[in-house]
Image (tube, rainbow, N blue to C red; front, side, top):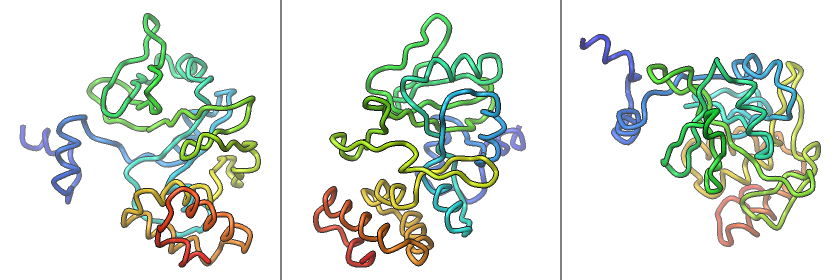
Length: 218
């Protein structure tokens, strides 16, 4: 029994992560390649955000808890039908979970995430962030007054995976500026163009006045 229980938890989890796993269940360390395989026949648009987007841009790898797959909120039902029979979808509204099923396929208005796992006894594999759009344009949730064409804020890697631009990924990360976000900034900063640096510093000043990052970025 001890070995069976041991399977569910990684070595070296800090108390906060261990408490999370005990409450919600374990996470499998998926990658963008896993997401590409899962969505290979999906006919909607999707992209990878978060730390993996920085990895892809810099070529500098760090450990990741999960892979942040993003797609349009309007395409949730398309995703559910694509994955029906292979993955269970659970809406996540700040820790309040609800399965998306044939009987109840609607995503709650206050839920911006969907967690995926194969069944109740398997680990979570993907954290899908559902993004609103305005007339087909990507709405920036840090400031919903701003919107952008998807092709202007993403890029496509040679393997076919579309990633959020590094300056946009870092603009999201600035709010929390956790140790892993500092690592991502350090890895990306030498590779950003001058235009990307100016945009990122100005955006962080706009979102978080007094934040320490813009002085480093400029």
